[in-house]
Image 1 (cartoon, helix red, strand yellow):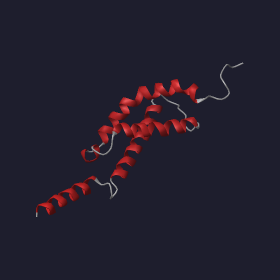
Image 2: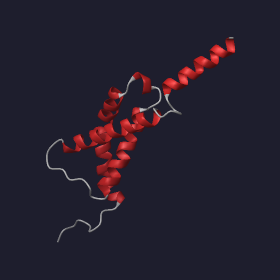
Image 3: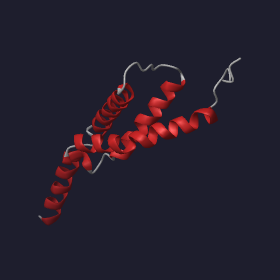
Image 4: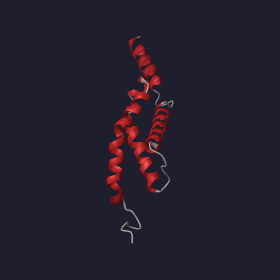
Amino acid sequence: MDDMPAVLTIADLMPAAAEIFNRHVDRLVALAAARLSQKYAQRVDPEDVVQSAFRSFFREAKSGRYTYERSGDLWRLLAGININKLYRHIEYNGAAKRNVSSRRRLRSLWRYSANT
């Protein structure tokens, strides 16, 4: 008989999750930081993007959504999730009410009107 439990619990998966996280976190943060323009670097934290990517990855992995066939598949999957999360963060921060450029223009207008 197989000693493997019929159902794996979160506690059973924690060492593997920690290993995946530790192996890829630095590269994912660097990837997100490299893709961020200066315009959004002050508003979007690459570490927040990576945390969000890992949350999504582990949630979907727990449901059995992913399979790996070749070496490097895990990295490609994590990098893809990370980039998509980065673009969503940028899109969120680029919305009209949160737009970095708009806020700068408003501050400039406020200073100009205060000085006149």
